[in-house]
Length: 156
Image 1 (tube, rainbow, N blue to C red):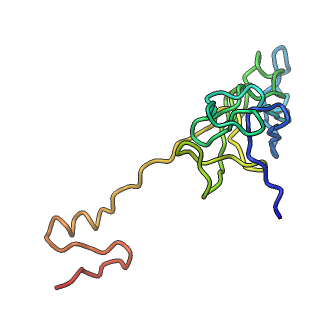
Image 2 (image 1 turned 60 degrees about the vertical axis):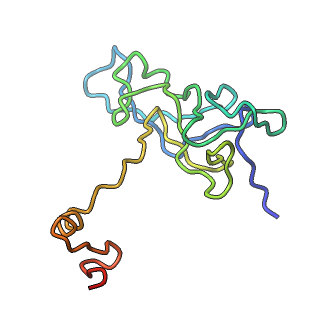
């Protein structure tokens, strides 16, 4: 039997980022100081946009593409500085990256304990798939292309 838990708005659930956020030190720092690694954490106790009508152990459920943490902690010293080297942010919300593929709450996938998160508000929504240019050209010429098998034409 598995002991997977569904994430919910509770301080019992914390996000611990596996990689540190490299931030520039706050001023006044010498110009030759390299970026410093700051370990990041987030707490689901102050989560936003949770499924309030669905409760797990009397706590609202944390769902994919809606819920986020209030803020990340750990890189506060960089707030007054130039912030993160790659993220360009500090103390921003964390968004879930992975989710359950089969369990949903209110048409949104659940987040389990152990799922990965985007740190410091670096959430990028999936872009719609680009149209197949050769398929479009073949369809315009009256010869539709099967995108699964490449350039084989449908029945003739």
